[in-house]
Length: 98
Image 1 (cartoon, rainbow, N blue to C red):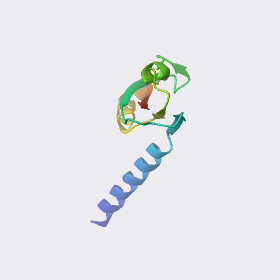
Image 2 (tube, rainbow, N blue to C red):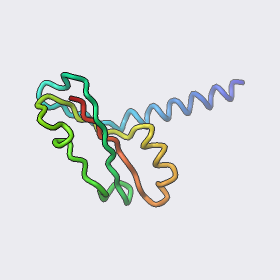
Image 3 (cartoon, one colour):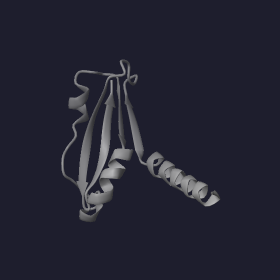
């Protein structure tokens, strides 16, 4: 029983460190005012060296002057990365909150 608890604790700790270290937050103006959220996915190849697409956060924000941009490796990105990492493809989630 204690071995199962140890394994579960180790997995939770690893997941915590993997996901918590991979987020960048940028606040524009006074930050989000309406809690409107839009997301896009940025794709990379060669272990993150080459972008495959461009996420235009200014276009996502539209005419808003107060918003927040968060780029992170989310749990979904982590799960996507498991099978496609063999071909060196990675993704990051870009979230714009107005």
